[in-house]
Each structure stands twice: as structure tokens, then as C-alpha cells.
Image (cartoon, rainbow, N blue to C red; front, side, top):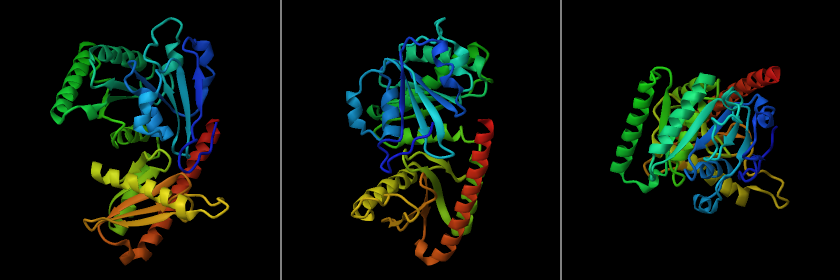
Amino acid sequence: MAYDYDPRGQDFNVAFQADSDFGASNVRGNFSDTKPRILLMGQKRSGKSSIQQVVFHKMSPNETLFLETTNHVVKDEISNSSFVQFQIWDFPGQIDFFDPAFDAEVIFGGCGALVFVIDAQDEYIEPLARLHQTVVRAHQINKDMSFEVFIHKVDGLSDDNKIDVTRDIHERVKEELEHDGLEDEIHMSFYLTSIYDHSIFEAFSKVVQKLIPQLPMLENLLNTLNNKCGIEKSFLFDVVSKIYIATDSTPVDMKSYELCSDIIDVVIDVSCIYGTGDDGTASAYDVKSSSVIKLSNGNVLYLREVNKYLALVCLVSKDPAEKQGILDYNFHCFRDAIQQVFKVHQRAIESRQ
């Protein structure tokens, strides 16, 4: 199922709700979709639904305080572009996946990633035990899925506490895997996250990138663009969620990522005010969307529309106006290459369907 979205990102998802007591027969048909799936799991009140609402529904972090506890499985269909197409399944913390009523083959088979959320401000001994049981069971069924651990709500911890909690969780997880002889088979990625800053978007960007088979090609295209145009850092952003589906091979600096992410909001907000006609027919983000913002340190943020779902955002050390011709030419080559990758990927999806 594909659903279009509002440029400001308010209505681009569709939630599918199922009763918490569903069995294998109830979900088998729903799990047959060709899109990769992300399972969002964790203990009750760990912040799973808040993460989903903030990242993919543009909810304000403060509004998540009023969210009710999830008592049923919620499915979100993310269909922003040919690259960003997947399903998120938010599982209530009280569900027992080892109950005979559940078919683990149906739940874990064919999944792309399992994201387990741990509340860093709460006792995490029981959640870590649940994490271990879930990961071991999922790995037995699907050895290709990736395991991601969000050490969440770290905004309430001091820097020293963040280090201590992270080290303790790492050591406990490692000991459990070594005890079962699985330390060489199961690999988990850990992220410190909070809905009150960009860390949750950065973490989900890493998760989604693992579901994109074209990622090495996109990274090479960005590297080539950087070399030809003297760009320091470049991101390929999904406009709605502001997660980046690809970046160049240089390390990601959090401050640079935050700046490049925020320019998307600036462009869309300004376009909504000044870029639409009296009849409101013009889109706030279209083929003409672009922006050049000079920073106080002399660097320049540069944004260009790739397609109606994606934006190229670059950090340039010199004013792009000095080499505008070269930059425009190479950008058009880059955009054409992206479109070609889109077409190949779309044909592959259609052939599978």
C-alpha cells in the first residue's frame, strides 16, 4: 500500500491496529508484504510509541507525554520513496512472544531489523533479560535481520551516567551472549537516543540504511559529488521524517547533521509562507526548491530538491556562488544517477511482486 503525504509531514502514515490477542492466523497475511519490516519492541513505558510518533508523525516531543500505553500491535506503512519503503510494527511491552498462541516464524521471519528500546532512566535488568530472550529466538528463525538497541531517554542523565549506563549494558549483553556461545553470531548496534534532540533521528537513519541495498551506490555518488564540487559533507534526506538515507564516507559529525537537518524545516516553513500562490495550489517543496544559508563560521548550507521525497543537503566551506555553474552541472548529473537507481530498484520490486 502506498500513501501520499502532506509536505509538512502530518499525514503520510497509515496505522493498522490489531487486537493484542491475535494469533498466527490473524497476522500471516499481513506479514506477506514485500517491504522490509522493522519490529519495535521493549518493555512497557520504555518510549517506543513516542519514538514512532516523533520520527514518523512529526509529533512534538512534549505532546508524547499524553500518549496512552500501547495495548495492541500498531503497524505503520512508510512509503515515502523507492528507497524509504518499510513497515514498522510497534509491539506492546506486555506481549509474550513465546506464548504458544504466537507463531515466531511469522513474527520474525523476513524481518529486516529488530529495534529494542531500553529506558536508561529505569531499572534495566529485566529489560536486558527480555532483550536476550527475544534476540536469541529471533536469530534462530532469521539470521539475516539486524539487531538495534536504543538506550533511550538519556536526556535525563549526566554525561558520566550516560557512559556508566552504556558500559554496563554493553557488558551485560556481551556476557549473556558469551554464556550461550553466540557472541560471534549475534551482533547488536547500540545507540544513545532521546526524542528531545536529533539523536533519535540519527539512530533511525542508521537502522533504515541497513534496509537499503543500494546504500553503497548512493554513498559512492555522494563521494563523487563531494570530490567534484569541493563539498565537505553531504546527506541525502527523506524530507518528511528528516532521517538521512545516505551520506558520504566521511564520519558524521552530530553538529553538522543537526544543521543539515534543520535547514529542511527552514525551507519548508518559508515556502509555506511565501512560496505558495493565493489559490494554495503550489507545493511547499517541489523541483524549484533550493536554499543557500551562510553560517557565522563562514561555511554554507546548500539544499537542492532531488525528487518530491528527497533532498540533497551539503555543507560547503566556500560560497557556492563562486562555482555555481560547476555545482549545478554536477548536481544535475547526480540527480539523473539517482533517478536511474530508482528505476532499477522499482523494476526489482515489481518483479518480486
